[in-house]
Length: 130
Picture (cartoon, rainbow, N blue to C red):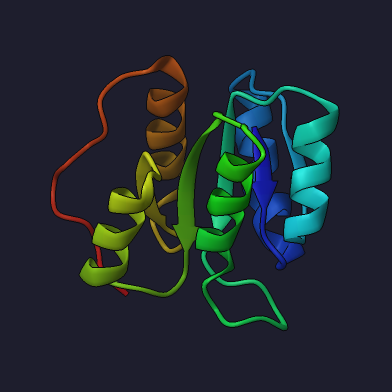
């Protein structure tokens, strides 16, 4: 799993939980670093923040678009601390396979990420909007 988030605490908290579950994790903080990492090696999943510092607040969408433009077909999950139903709907319509809120319990984040890795269907139950 490649985590793309400009807040190091996200990778520092989510990464070890994924690793304990047997999932290899790498983390980067920028779109450019993410695209470079994806070019260097294969990842089964990208977990991308919606908003990265110094940009327009919608870099997660830009990252997914750039990945597809480069022919990268790795599945991507949006993980954000902001948004709501409209952002969730847009993320899913644009091709993210799931939409996660950073304030979700870590066990739920783990369950959803491992389900995505296993290829099970996205949980379509109502999401917490923040």
